[in-house]
Every structure is written in structure tokens, then in C-alpha cells.
Amino acid sequence: FFSDAACGSSITNVNIPTSANSASFFFKCTSAASPTTIRAADHAGVLTAATQGETINARSTTTAVSFSTNPVSYGNSTNATVTVTDTDANGTKSFPSGTVSVASDSGDTIAAPCTLASTATIGISSCTVAITPTHASTHTISANYPGDTAHSASSETGQALTVNAATVTVTFTAADKI
Image 1: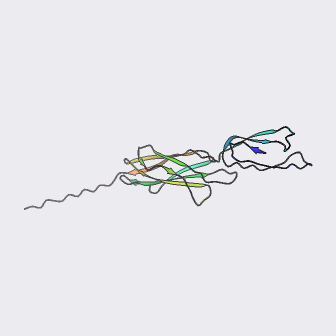
Image 2 (image 1 turned 30 degrees about the vertical axis):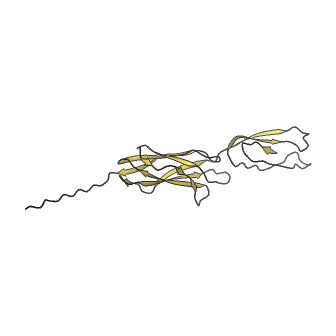
Image 3 (image 1 turned 30 degrees about the horizontal axis):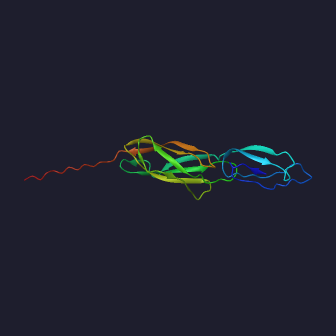
């Protein structure tokens, strides 16, 4: 038994007992590929080879954005933490990897890139970027995770960041009279 190169994994020597006409085996692909082909042939090459196409689906994810400070005063920055979670109910959870794009609908300055790092919880990765607002108002911050070889893409399409006007204090002093 063997698979094609799309999965990068191979199975060798699955024995079928002479008293049976089939065998069961477990095939674990480490990356999503569509389709992955599994082929079978007898050792002596006497029987007709069989081919079975299988689709290995990417693990589902969710993406969320949170802020270290919200609201923030104009002139100050805040950190945005992007969390990407493997939410697939089947199989073993794994850490999403790669770079997440973070954007603002208000033209804010965003220190990029946001490269995911594994957390202490299996299946959850996160990254943090600084956001410096360009003006006072409500800003919508979004994050897009494009997926990796094992995980599907996901997005946070609108987390509100409130930017308050800066407080300005003006002090007047009376001029001394002569």
C-alpha cells in the first residue's frame, strides 16, 4: 500500500490473512490535500492494482482579536492579540501556524507582521501587534488567518476599538501688575 506525494506519507506491508479477503489499516495524513490517492497491489504483482481517492480536509479554525486596552486615548497605542484556535472536533488538535494579517478601517498604524506562536494550550496559537490610532472615533480591527498545510482559513471581521479624544489642559496665568 502507498499514497501519492500530495500527503507525503506512505504505508507499507499491510498483510491480508489467507482466511480473509480484506484488511483494515489506519492512514494519517499530516497535511490537507485533495485528493490523496491510496493504491494497493499484491506483493507478487499478480493481482490487479486498486486505487482509492480520499480527500484530506483541513482542520477548521476560528480567529479572534482582543485588545490590551479598550478604550484607548488618542496619542496612545494598544496591543491587539490575535488568537487562532483549531476547532475541529475530530482527531488530534494541532497548533495553527503562519502569519496573520491585521487591518484597520481607519488607517491606523499597525506594527506588522503578526506571526503566530504556540500557546500552552494545544490547538491555540496567538500573536500580538501594536496599534496606534490615527484619530478619535470607533475603529474596526480585522484579522485574516490564511490557513496552513493542516488548517483552514478564518477571519475576525470586525472588533471595535474605541479611541477617545485626548484630554488637553490649558492653564492661563495672570500677568503680574506693576
